[in-house]
Length: 394
Ligand SMILES: Nc1ncnc2c1ncn2[C@@H]1O[C@H](COP(=O)(O)OP(=O)(O)OP(=O)(O)O)[C@@H](O)[C@H]1O
Ligand SMILES: [Mg+2]
Image (cartoon, rainbow, N blue to C red):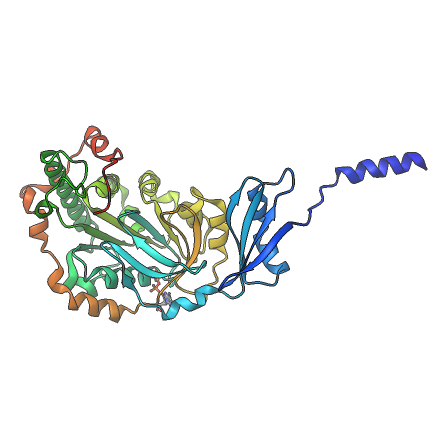
Protein backbone atom coordinates (compact mmCIF):
# COMPACT_ATOMS: atom_id res chain seq x y z
CA UNK A 1 0.00 0.00 0.00
CA UNK A 2 2.73 2.46 1.03
CA UNK A 3 4.71 1.59 -2.10
CA UNK A 4 1.71 2.40 -4.26
CA UNK A 5 1.29 5.83 -2.63
CA UNK A 6 4.94 6.70 -3.26
CA UNK A 7 4.54 5.68 -6.88
CA UNK A 8 1.42 7.84 -7.23
CA UNK A 9 3.18 10.80 -5.67
CA UNK A 10 6.09 10.47 -8.07
CA UNK A 11 3.64 10.36 -10.94
CA UNK A 12 1.88 13.44 -9.65
CA UNK A 13 5.14 15.34 -9.42
CA UNK A 14 5.83 14.55 -13.02
CA UNK A 15 2.54 15.98 -14.22
CA UNK A 16 2.90 19.51 -15.64
CA UNK A 17 0.17 21.58 -14.08
CA UNK A 18 -0.83 24.88 -15.67
CA UNK A 19 -0.70 27.27 -12.79
CA UNK A 20 -3.29 29.99 -12.32
CA UNK A 21 -1.88 33.39 -13.22
CA UNK A 22 -0.96 35.66 -10.32
CA UNK A 23 -2.79 38.79 -11.36
CA UNK A 24 -2.19 42.33 -10.13
CA UNK A 25 -4.67 45.17 -9.99
CA UNK A 26 -7.14 45.42 -12.86
CA UNK A 27 -7.09 48.91 -14.37
CA UNK A 28 -9.88 50.00 -16.75
CA UNK A 29 -9.05 51.48 -20.19
CA UNK A 30 -11.43 53.00 -22.77
CA UNK A 31 -11.46 49.67 -24.62
CA UNK A 32 -11.44 47.25 -21.68
CA UNK A 33 -8.81 46.75 -19.01
CA UNK A 34 -5.12 46.26 -18.35
CA UNK A 35 -3.71 43.84 -15.82
CA UNK A 36 -0.22 42.74 -14.81
CA UNK A 37 0.56 39.08 -14.16
CA UNK A 38 3.58 37.84 -12.23
CA UNK A 39 5.36 34.98 -13.95
CA UNK A 40 5.78 31.69 -12.11
CA UNK A 41 9.29 30.29 -11.94
CA UNK A 42 10.12 28.77 -15.30
CA UNK A 43 7.49 30.78 -17.20
CA UNK A 44 8.40 33.22 -19.97
CA UNK A 45 6.32 35.93 -21.71
CA UNK A 46 6.12 33.51 -24.64
CA UNK A 47 4.05 31.12 -22.49
CA UNK A 48 1.47 33.91 -22.21
CA UNK A 49 1.65 34.69 -25.94
CA UNK A 50 0.71 31.07 -26.56
CA UNK A 51 -2.45 31.14 -24.42
CA UNK A 52 -3.86 34.62 -25.14
CA UNK A 53 -6.81 33.18 -27.00
CA UNK A 54 -7.63 30.85 -24.10
CA UNK A 55 -7.46 33.82 -21.73
CA UNK A 56 -9.85 35.81 -23.93
CA UNK A 57 -12.42 33.02 -23.72
CA UNK A 58 -11.90 32.52 -20.00
CA UNK A 59 -12.32 36.26 -19.33
CA UNK A 60 -15.25 36.52 -21.77
CA UNK A 61 -13.62 39.40 -23.66
CA UNK A 62 -13.05 40.07 -27.34
CA UNK A 63 -9.29 39.72 -27.21
CA UNK A 64 -6.22 39.75 -24.96
CA UNK A 65 -2.84 41.12 -26.02
CA UNK A 66 0.53 41.06 -24.30
CA UNK A 67 1.43 44.72 -24.36
CA UNK A 68 4.78 44.68 -22.53
CA UNK A 69 6.94 42.69 -20.19
CA UNK A 70 9.60 43.22 -17.55
CA UNK A 71 11.65 40.48 -15.91
CA UNK A 72 9.20 38.40 -13.94
CA UNK A 73 6.01 40.07 -15.11
CA UNK A 74 3.86 40.67 -18.17
CA UNK A 75 1.23 43.30 -18.84
CA UNK A 76 -1.93 42.11 -20.59
CA UNK A 77 -4.53 44.27 -22.23
CA UNK A 78 -8.07 43.01 -22.74
CA UNK A 79 -10.53 44.57 -25.17
CA UNK A 80 -14.24 44.05 -24.56
CA UNK A 81 -15.42 44.68 -28.12
CA UNK A 82 -13.47 44.59 -31.35
CA UNK A 83 -12.06 48.14 -31.74
CA UNK A 84 -11.57 47.45 -35.43
CA UNK A 85 -15.34 47.66 -35.95
CA UNK A 86 -14.88 51.42 -35.61
CA UNK A 87 -12.46 51.66 -38.55
CA UNK A 88 -14.95 51.57 -41.41
CA UNK A 89 -16.19 55.12 -40.77
CA UNK A 90 -12.72 56.61 -40.35
CA UNK A 91 -11.30 59.24 -42.67
CA UNK A 92 -7.92 58.78 -44.28
CA UNK A 93 -5.63 61.64 -43.30
CA UNK A 94 -2.19 62.83 -44.31
CA UNK A 95 -0.11 63.30 -41.18
CA UNK A 96 2.97 64.94 -42.64
CA UNK A 97 5.21 64.27 -45.60
CA UNK A 98 4.96 60.63 -46.74
CA UNK A 99 2.88 59.74 -43.71
CA UNK A 100 -0.74 58.62 -44.06
CA UNK A 101 -3.19 57.46 -41.42
CA UNK A 102 -4.95 54.64 -43.23
CA UNK A 103 -6.97 53.01 -40.46
CA UNK A 104 -7.01 51.76 -36.90
CA UNK A 105 -4.95 49.32 -34.84
CA UNK A 106 -6.63 47.04 -32.34
CA UNK A 107 -5.02 48.88 -29.41
CA UNK A 108 -6.99 51.94 -30.45
CA UNK A 109 -3.98 53.72 -32.01
CA UNK A 110 -4.04 54.87 -35.63
CA UNK A 111 -2.76 52.54 -38.34
CA UNK A 112 -0.14 54.70 -40.03
CA UNK A 113 1.93 54.09 -43.13
CA UNK A 114 4.95 56.32 -42.77
CA UNK A 115 7.42 55.84 -45.61
CA UNK A 116 10.01 57.97 -43.81
CA UNK A 117 10.30 55.45 -40.96
CA UNK A 118 9.41 52.26 -42.88
CA UNK A 119 10.36 52.87 -46.51
CA UNK A 120 9.00 49.73 -48.15
CA UNK A 121 5.87 47.64 -47.59
CA UNK A 122 4.62 44.24 -48.60
CA UNK A 123 0.82 44.09 -48.71
CA UNK A 124 -0.67 40.62 -49.25
CA UNK A 125 -4.10 39.04 -49.14
CA UNK A 126 -6.47 36.75 -51.00
CA UNK A 127 -8.74 38.24 -53.63
CA UNK A 128 -11.27 40.68 -52.12
CA UNK A 129 -9.35 40.87 -48.83
CA UNK A 130 -8.73 44.63 -49.01
CA UNK A 131 -5.34 45.15 -50.67
CA UNK A 132 -6.53 47.66 -53.25
CA UNK A 133 -8.59 49.47 -50.64
CA UNK A 134 -5.32 50.22 -48.84
CA UNK A 135 -3.69 51.38 -52.07
CA UNK A 136 -6.73 53.66 -52.55
CA UNK A 137 -6.14 55.05 -49.05
CA UNK A 138 -2.55 55.86 -49.99
CA UNK A 139 -3.68 57.59 -53.19
CA UNK A 140 -6.09 59.72 -51.14
CA UNK A 141 -3.47 60.51 -48.49
CA UNK A 142 -0.52 61.13 -50.79
CA UNK A 143 -2.16 62.92 -53.73
CA UNK A 144 -2.19 66.34 -52.02
CA UNK A 145 1.45 65.96 -50.94
CA UNK A 146 4.60 67.04 -52.79
CA UNK A 147 5.43 63.48 -53.85
CA UNK A 148 5.52 61.68 -57.18
CA UNK A 149 3.43 58.53 -57.58
CA UNK A 150 4.34 55.73 -59.95
CA UNK A 151 2.14 52.71 -60.72
CA UNK A 152 3.05 49.20 -61.80
CA UNK A 153 -0.25 47.56 -62.61
CA UNK A 154 0.23 44.05 -63.90
CA UNK A 155 -3.51 43.47 -63.78
CA UNK A 156 -3.74 45.04 -67.19
CA UNK A 157 -4.18 48.49 -65.70
CA UNK A 158 -7.53 47.89 -63.99
CA UNK A 159 -6.21 48.89 -60.56
CA UNK A 160 -4.27 52.11 -61.18
CA UNK A 161 -5.45 53.46 -64.55
CA UNK A 162 -8.27 55.39 -62.78
CA UNK A 163 -5.58 57.36 -60.90
CA UNK A 164 -3.45 58.06 -63.96
CA UNK A 165 -3.98 61.82 -63.74
CA UNK A 166 -1.93 61.90 -60.52
CA UNK A 167 0.63 59.28 -61.60
CA UNK A 168 3.94 60.40 -63.06
CA UNK A 169 4.29 57.03 -64.81
CA UNK A 170 2.27 53.86 -65.19
CA UNK A 171 3.41 50.50 -66.56
CA UNK A 172 0.91 47.74 -67.27
CA UNK A 173 2.93 45.12 -69.18
CA UNK A 174 6.01 43.36 -67.93
CA UNK A 175 8.34 44.71 -70.60
CA UNK A 176 7.13 48.23 -69.76
CA UNK A 177 7.79 47.46 -66.11
CA UNK A 178 11.35 46.37 -66.89
CA UNK A 179 11.92 49.67 -68.70
CA UNK A 180 10.32 51.81 -66.01
CA UNK A 181 12.30 50.02 -63.28
CA UNK A 182 15.50 50.67 -65.23
CA UNK A 183 14.58 54.36 -65.33
CA UNK A 184 13.94 54.36 -61.59
CA UNK A 185 17.35 52.80 -60.97
CA UNK A 186 18.81 55.50 -63.22
CA UNK A 187 17.01 58.11 -61.10
CA UNK A 188 18.70 56.56 -58.07
CA UNK A 189 22.01 56.79 -59.87
CA UNK A 190 21.62 60.49 -60.58
CA UNK A 191 20.49 61.16 -56.99
CA UNK A 192 23.58 59.26 -55.88
CA UNK A 193 25.70 61.67 -57.91
CA UNK A 194 23.88 64.64 -56.37
CA UNK A 195 24.52 63.27 -52.86
CA UNK A 196 28.19 62.71 -53.66
CA UNK A 197 28.52 66.32 -54.85
CA UNK A 198 27.13 67.54 -51.55
CA UNK A 199 28.98 64.90 -49.51
CA UNK A 200 25.80 63.51 -47.96
CA UNK A 201 24.57 59.95 -47.69
CA UNK A 202 20.91 60.58 -48.45
CA UNK A 203 18.58 63.16 -49.94
CA UNK A 204 17.13 64.13 -46.55
CA UNK A 205 20.42 65.34 -45.15
CA UNK A 206 20.24 68.92 -43.81
CA UNK A 207 23.44 69.80 -45.72
CA UNK A 208 21.62 69.28 -49.01
CA UNK A 209 20.22 72.70 -50.02
CA UNK A 210 16.41 72.70 -49.93
CA UNK A 211 16.24 73.71 -53.60
CA UNK A 212 18.36 70.72 -54.60
CA UNK A 213 16.37 68.13 -52.66
CA UNK A 214 14.69 65.81 -55.15
CA UNK A 215 11.01 64.98 -54.84
CA UNK A 216 10.20 61.65 -53.16
CA UNK A 217 8.69 58.94 -55.36
CA UNK A 218 6.18 56.37 -54.05
CA UNK A 219 5.98 53.27 -56.23
CA UNK A 220 2.78 51.20 -56.08
CA UNK A 221 2.94 47.64 -57.44
CA UNK A 222 -0.11 45.42 -57.95
CA UNK A 223 0.24 42.13 -58.51
CA UNK A 224 3.83 41.30 -57.71
CA UNK A 225 3.51 37.63 -58.77
CA UNK A 226 2.97 38.79 -62.36
CA UNK A 227 6.41 40.38 -62.27
CA UNK A 228 8.06 37.08 -61.42
CA UNK A 229 5.97 34.28 -62.94
CA UNK A 230 7.00 32.93 -66.32
CA UNK A 231 4.65 31.32 -68.81
CA UNK A 232 7.53 30.69 -71.20
CA UNK A 233 10.82 30.43 -69.25
CA UNK A 234 13.00 30.21 -72.37
CA UNK A 235 11.98 33.64 -73.56
CA UNK A 236 11.10 35.38 -70.31
CA UNK A 237 13.93 34.35 -67.99
CA UNK A 238 16.15 37.32 -68.76
CA UNK A 239 13.37 39.86 -68.44
CA UNK A 240 12.23 38.42 -65.11
CA UNK A 241 15.81 38.40 -63.82
CA UNK A 242 16.24 42.04 -64.85
CA UNK A 243 12.96 43.02 -63.18
CA UNK A 244 13.90 41.19 -59.97
CA UNK A 245 17.36 42.77 -59.79
CA UNK A 246 16.08 46.28 -60.45
CA UNK A 247 13.30 45.99 -57.91
CA UNK A 248 15.80 44.74 -55.35
CA UNK A 249 18.19 47.63 -56.10
CA UNK A 250 15.37 50.12 -55.62
CA UNK A 251 14.46 48.47 -52.33
CA UNK A 252 18.08 48.49 -51.14
CA UNK A 253 18.75 52.11 -52.02
CA UNK A 254 15.28 53.63 -51.96
CA UNK A 255 15.45 54.89 -48.39
CA UNK A 256 18.57 56.96 -49.09
CA UNK A 257 17.26 58.39 -52.36
CA UNK A 258 13.61 58.96 -51.58
CA UNK A 259 12.06 56.10 -53.53
CA UNK A 260 9.53 54.01 -51.64
CA UNK A 261 7.81 50.74 -52.51
CA UNK A 262 4.31 49.54 -51.71
CA UNK A 263 4.07 46.04 -53.19
CA UNK A 264 0.73 44.19 -53.30
CA UNK A 265 0.22 40.52 -54.05
CA UNK A 266 -2.36 37.79 -53.64
CA UNK A 267 0.02 34.98 -53.13
CA UNK A 268 3.69 35.14 -52.24
CA UNK A 269 5.51 31.83 -52.35
CA UNK A 270 8.87 30.31 -53.08
CA UNK A 271 7.63 29.34 -56.56
CA UNK A 272 8.14 32.97 -57.54
CA UNK A 273 11.90 32.35 -57.35
CA UNK A 274 14.80 33.39 -55.19
CA UNK A 275 14.38 37.05 -56.03
CA UNK A 276 11.23 37.19 -53.93
CA UNK A 277 12.91 36.21 -50.67
CA UNK A 278 15.69 38.75 -51.23
CA UNK A 279 13.10 41.43 -51.97
CA UNK A 280 11.01 40.49 -48.95
CA UNK A 281 14.00 41.05 -46.66
CA UNK A 282 14.03 44.69 -47.83
CA UNK A 283 10.27 45.22 -47.51
CA UNK A 284 10.24 45.65 -43.75
CA UNK A 285 6.67 46.91 -43.48
CA UNK A 286 4.31 43.95 -43.66
CA UNK A 287 0.56 43.85 -44.07
CA UNK A 288 -1.16 40.48 -44.25
CA UNK A 289 -4.88 40.50 -45.03
CA UNK A 290 -6.94 37.32 -45.03
CA UNK A 291 -5.06 34.68 -47.01
CA UNK A 292 -6.11 31.24 -48.21
CA UNK A 293 -2.77 29.54 -47.77
CA UNK A 294 -0.31 29.24 -44.92
CA UNK A 295 2.67 29.88 -47.14
CA UNK A 296 1.67 33.43 -48.04
CA UNK A 297 1.07 34.31 -44.37
CA UNK A 298 4.43 32.80 -43.48
CA UNK A 299 6.21 34.62 -46.32
CA UNK A 300 4.67 37.88 -45.20
CA UNK A 301 5.04 37.57 -41.42
CA UNK A 302 6.84 34.34 -40.55
CA UNK A 303 10.36 35.78 -40.62
CA UNK A 304 9.20 38.43 -38.14
CA UNK A 305 6.88 36.70 -35.65
CA UNK A 306 5.20 33.29 -35.62
CA UNK A 307 2.33 34.59 -33.47
CA UNK A 308 1.59 37.12 -36.19
CA UNK A 309 1.15 34.28 -38.68
CA UNK A 310 -1.36 32.57 -36.40
CA UNK A 311 -3.26 35.84 -35.94
CA UNK A 312 -3.39 36.42 -39.70
CA UNK A 313 -4.82 32.97 -40.27
CA UNK A 314 -7.73 33.89 -37.98
CA UNK A 315 -8.90 36.89 -39.99
CA UNK A 316 -12.49 36.12 -41.02
CA UNK A 317 -13.36 36.41 -44.72
CA UNK A 318 -16.32 38.69 -44.02
CA UNK A 319 -14.11 41.51 -42.66
CA UNK A 320 -12.26 42.89 -45.70
CA UNK A 321 -9.64 45.46 -44.80
CA UNK A 322 -8.65 43.57 -41.64
CA UNK A 323 -4.97 42.70 -41.54
CA UNK A 324 -2.06 41.82 -39.32
CA UNK A 325 0.51 44.59 -39.60
CA UNK A 326 4.16 44.87 -38.64
CA UNK A 327 5.47 48.42 -38.98
CA UNK A 328 7.92 50.73 -37.31
CA UNK A 329 7.78 49.22 -33.82
CA UNK A 330 8.49 45.71 -35.20
CA UNK A 331 5.56 44.37 -33.17
CA UNK A 332 2.52 42.88 -34.83
CA UNK A 333 -0.91 44.45 -34.54
CA UNK A 334 -4.33 43.60 -35.84
CA UNK A 335 -5.49 46.49 -37.96
CA UNK A 336 -8.32 47.57 -40.19
CA UNK A 337 -8.08 50.08 -42.97
CA UNK A 338 -10.61 52.85 -43.46
CA UNK A 339 -12.99 52.02 -46.29
CA UNK A 340 -11.91 54.02 -49.35
CA UNK A 341 -13.88 53.62 -52.54
CA UNK A 342 -12.14 53.68 -55.88
CA UNK A 343 -14.28 56.76 -56.73
CA UNK A 344 -12.83 58.67 -53.76
CA UNK A 345 -9.28 57.82 -54.76
CA UNK A 346 -10.05 58.77 -58.34
CA UNK A 347 -11.51 62.10 -57.24
CA UNK A 348 -8.38 62.83 -55.16
CA UNK A 349 -6.15 61.90 -58.09
CA UNK A 350 -8.11 64.26 -60.39
CA UNK A 351 -8.19 67.09 -57.86
CA UNK A 352 -4.43 67.00 -57.37
CA UNK A 353 -3.41 66.08 -60.92
CA UNK A 354 -1.46 69.36 -61.07
CA UNK A 355 0.78 68.05 -58.27
CA UNK A 356 2.05 65.18 -60.41
CA UNK A 357 5.59 65.92 -61.59
CA UNK A 358 6.13 64.91 -65.20
CA UNK A 359 8.19 61.80 -65.75
CA UNK A 360 10.59 63.87 -67.85
CA UNK A 361 11.27 66.23 -64.96
CA UNK A 362 12.02 63.27 -62.67
CA UNK A 363 14.37 61.61 -65.12
CA UNK A 364 15.89 64.76 -66.65
CA UNK A 365 19.12 64.67 -64.64
CA UNK A 366 20.29 61.48 -66.35
CA UNK A 367 18.85 62.07 -69.84
CA UNK A 368 20.24 59.16 -71.76
CA UNK A 369 20.02 55.42 -71.97
CA UNK A 370 18.29 54.17 -68.81
CA UNK A 371 19.32 50.56 -69.40
CA UNK A 372 22.95 51.63 -69.33
CA UNK A 373 22.54 54.09 -66.51
CA UNK A 374 20.80 51.42 -64.45
CA UNK A 375 23.96 49.40 -63.87
CA UNK A 376 24.98 49.54 -60.22
CA UNK A 377 27.71 47.67 -58.45
CA UNK A 378 27.92 46.28 -54.92
CA UNK A 379 30.33 48.96 -53.66
CA UNK A 380 27.88 51.71 -54.60
CA UNK A 381 25.11 49.90 -52.77
CA UNK A 382 27.23 49.56 -49.65
CA UNK A 383 28.28 53.19 -49.85
CA UNK A 384 24.67 54.33 -49.50
CA UNK A 385 23.06 51.66 -47.35
CA UNK A 386 25.15 52.18 -44.23
CA UNK A 387 23.15 53.95 -41.55
CA UNK A 388 23.83 57.65 -41.36
CA UNK A 389 23.52 59.14 -37.89
CA UNK A 390 22.65 62.54 -39.33
CA UNK A 391 19.66 61.04 -41.14
CA UNK A 392 17.10 62.98 -39.20
CA UNK A 393 13.64 63.73 -40.50
CA UNK A 394 13.40 67.24 -41.91
N1 LIG B 1 -11.45 48.49 -44.69
C1 LIG B 1 -12.55 48.09 -45.35
N2 LIG B 1 -13.76 48.24 -44.81
C2 LIG B 1 -14.87 47.86 -45.47
N3 LIG B 1 -14.86 47.27 -46.69
C3 LIG B 1 -13.69 47.08 -47.27
C4 LIG B 1 -12.46 47.46 -46.64
N4 LIG B 1 -11.44 47.13 -47.46
C5 LIG B 1 -11.99 46.57 -48.55
N5 LIG B 1 -13.33 46.52 -48.45
C6 LIG B 1 -14.25 46.01 -49.48
O1 LIG B 1 -13.87 44.68 -49.79
C7 LIG B 1 -13.89 44.47 -51.20
C8 LIG B 1 -12.54 43.97 -51.68
O2 LIG B 1 -11.56 44.94 -51.45
P1 LIG B 1 -10.31 45.13 -52.43
O3 LIG B 1 -10.75 45.43 -53.81
O4 LIG B 1 -9.42 46.13 -51.77
O5 LIG B 1 -9.69 43.67 -52.41
P2 LIG B 1 -8.34 43.16 -53.07
O6 LIG B 1 -7.59 42.46 -52.02
O7 LIG B 1 -7.65 44.25 -53.80
O8 LIG B 1 -8.89 42.08 -54.11
P3 LIG B 1 -8.26 41.63 -55.52
O9 LIG B 1 -7.07 40.78 -55.19
O10 LIG B 1 -9.36 40.85 -56.13
O11 LIG B 1 -7.88 42.87 -56.26
C9 LIG B 1 -14.31 45.78 -51.84
O12 LIG B 1 -15.67 45.73 -52.14
C10 LIG B 1 -14.07 46.82 -50.77
O13 LIG B 1 -14.96 47.88 -50.85
MG1 LIG C 1 -7.08 44.55 -55.79
